[in-house]
Length: 569
Image (tube, rainbow, N blue to C red):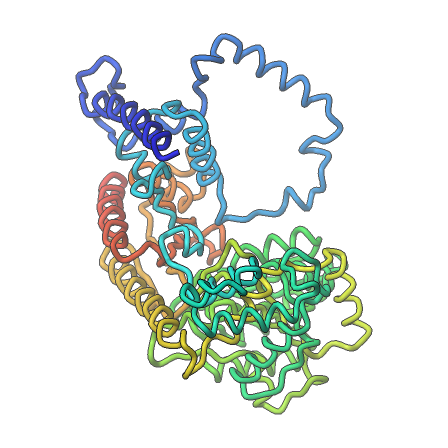
């Protein structure tokens, strides 16, 4: 198998070197003349070429087969014009078409080595072929894909739960920590049939919900009820579940921050509601102003929109701010007064990087203000995908719902039951992040070292990117307080805006596309998150590891300077 992989790599490298020599030799008859004057067009050309050029084995029949497929699909009962218009309205910016193209080309290269002999620089920055050649994915919060290692204790417990027969083997004591073995036994005793492949209760395994509720109570200092916990496949299904519950028609509105995580605009569109925007104040560190909420609420109601809920993302995505507790109190009072459900996206609660800010859950804030179960309707979302754990692919999370009548809770349970249950591995991890090793446990020191190492590294990377953005012409970036992203504003030259319009792209999308073509770095245009009209932003994650972050900064800095020079007014 290793010899086969090595041979694949050798073939790919040979094709790469052949094309690279052509690209580097501007006198070659194979080198398009316009690349000599505009080198950035080379990578763009290659992407377009390999997206359209037929393989040698199929070139003779490509035209006829394409026509045949077109005719076949034209007779099918489902067309773009006949599908649900809500699907067409839905957009999700962090998985844009450029990323989809790169992933498709990567798969084609894997399936057919040498089929796409890309330029050497392009293959090293766009496609993943070996561990040393990877796209610089700064478009999505996916830590493990960029080299972050999982927490050892969490994975040990998960492995033992998935393969419980090894718990009785003598060698297991030497391979796994004593507390991970003990925890695995505890969890397996709570799972029906002691099998992670079995269905569970639709809200999640009761014992795991008990553990999560205890973790919430320890965090907040106020009681938590396991019956309020719904375990889900990440936070996203929980958000969709609440949108299904709250949205009845286009006349129902959901308050969302602008900029916002596109999950919210997408889910509101899919469920047929109306997004009611409130703008965060970039000049005040992406602050959330109650006066803005009041103005937008009044405007929405005057237009016949029944605003039902307020989404708050804290720490912020894509903006990275951490709300002050006083501001949270104002938000709770606003929801109480206006009769709004408070939807609190708190998936980045572990990601706070500045000493003058700390995370407070909205439930803790509401209870500390004296509001009880029947005073305010509140839903808190948590996920195993973020924090220091970054277990995105395991798909685990939960929502805690409070302030809903038994009749409404029964309807929420019914919606959850349609999907039977969330996956058991995700449920286990959700319980582990809310109940990690404690002082005195065998794994405590190693767990603490891993956690602190990840979070301190994220803080350093966030600071480096923030400083790099602010050092560039026409770029301003607010302080990176938390979460996993920066959202710098870019003052684009008029000529660049005109160039974007000429190819029917938003200016920030044009900028990001040019960045990809020149460097292989994938950022997301601010237009995918929403922004004040006439302003342009990009979102970057802080997730490339520290040995890569300098390269990201260097490549981006070089590109930006050249871009500004090219379009200077």
